[in-house]
Image (tube, rainbow, N blue to C red):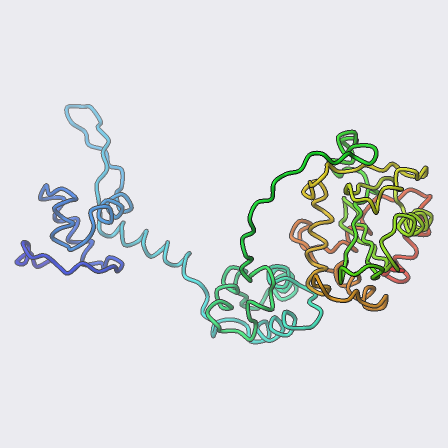
Length: 358
């Protein structure tokens, strides 16, 4: 190493240390120089030098008068080795190094009118089905999208689009609970250990009086969903629909919000009905998450879709792989659920049609 320029100061600019610079750091330390002085000599920030010294230090032992003393010493080759290892871990896969078939199928799947996958679920299921192919990570795919390297745009993935921050609403507390409070709901429902407990909600298209609405129910354990298009949101209309669903499907309990449209649910005798606290949509998180997916196809302010379209969308959502279930879909989870004999026809219908929509 040439030490003739020991007193020169280099122009400060961010870059990774070279092997030569690491050798200089080791030499300066042996000369007894402090990190602040080494930083000045190399044109680096003091904290950058300190991190490099820590990264490349190796514990040493010194025997003096029969007594062992432990200390850390910086070695240039150790620092270089750690750097190269970290670099290999952090560097993302270049696009031209990926499977071309994977990229083509990814772009096709995520730009389709009906998306059967999220980025993550597509990546993970493709890796399982094609272990021999070079497939980038989910994080890398999002990076490709942000850099404009794929035909997929952020607008194709609603969760990538920035959401305008809303001002906090003042919490109202004067609204009474319609019936049995969610606080009375048993723990086996809360912890999702038992199948057959559903959350209910209404999806409105255009907020016009007399406009058709969509009634949705989501099973808490499997996240399986039922969808029904109704002529209006009157409580009597909803009760008739729910009564029919109870006769057809394994519904042991229903959790609703405190809206007046659900005011007659507490009169149902066949199931237990619980009401969330007023203005507390987070207490029905399962249904809220489902509605978020549904809103990709029925945006607020648009006319409610036809029953056939509702069936197609619900079918898609029920076959949508979820990371929560190790990339199994609600349909697959439903088939794994333990069914009471009372609901044997329900299971048979699932195998025959895969769709339960009215």
